[in-house]
Length: 526
Ligand SMILES: [Fe+2]
Image (cartoon, rainbow, N blue to C red; front, side):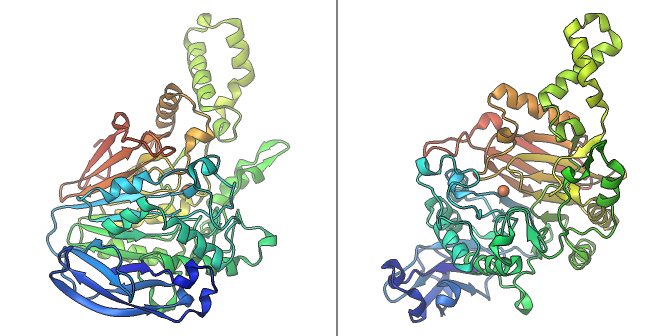
């Protein structure tokens, strides 16, 4: 178990140069009770400027499947008491994980974290990335930041080590986030914004030439992540190797993946395939289905295959960042020639024209003549930063899961919206995917300009109908999901909030959703 704290030196509070502060020593204690009557392990450790005064202890010798309390004590201060829980061993009847992603400080308040802090039924919180965002003041999703008192620090975009450290430190001043860390263990992976938007192996969409060497920036981002997150330092000093697995007794093998940094080739861009004569489908299909194209990389794939094949647990669960389900939409929608609503309306007209054309008005017939051909364009993936941009590697992962007879459950974040997908390979059920909405980042409701509840519900129904594997979506609410595993089934429950833009909020129970999947079916609705 990793226990974590940060000790802010007095010199740093008074804005003196903290790099010359002597190392700070702290005692730490782990007990079975919150009053520390029964301390089971205790020792001391020191921290200094080289790790931004963060302090991590890898506590050994704890019992399996037990709740523990911990605190740190310096010469002048005692920390708040943290609560944590070790992994169970042996026969395990239930595991309940909360899953979150995309917590953007200037975009809203961290009420989702407060909701999680108040729960007593969780084994762990799984954070699938975008724990911080790298943008400057006034950047992405910052329209309400000033009004909310949440303008980011530093004011500039994060580039250097000190920038990333300052941003993590600001996030960690948030009382709702503090409460969540205090109440539960976190299992985390980074997504792109812990570095820069749409990160891949050697670059990022939001890294420009005038921002210096990308690899230097990447190293700074990874160092700050390693300092500020309660994560075990990876072996062989390679803190960039984030893939690791957690065994919850005989029930769940939680396999955490890095889809960003170790293996990912650069994202394709649909705009590059439009020529004067239209969309160059052969070139696009050739590039996207190139067998050499990598997302998690050969080494991590081999490791993942080993995890699937050797897992003695009932459920094999991937904790990773991006949507794995096939999310293809009609090309006219993807290329923004038609909105989802226009497409649905036009499709309806086309259906009537085929059977009862006399019902259509002259204006509707003209509309069909003008825009109808757009209906006949094929489907295109709408997000090439997701697994849809790397279909060969996705097929390899699903093939391995099928070979290993896995009960595969993929947990995803990244989109800021809730989704549930059936994952299939050649028509065979290979697994299910549950995707968590963002903690604060705006979702498709903003991109699609869905301003009324009616428009939101219509878009959700249309998208679910247009995408064969998609079983459910919520396109408008921030929130989180709990995923509960038992020997018989996995149960995903989405919890949505009515707002993250005001201190007053409530859980929007009208939008709550539960999906259960029976063991050995790999199918929602089986
Ligand atoms: Fe995000």
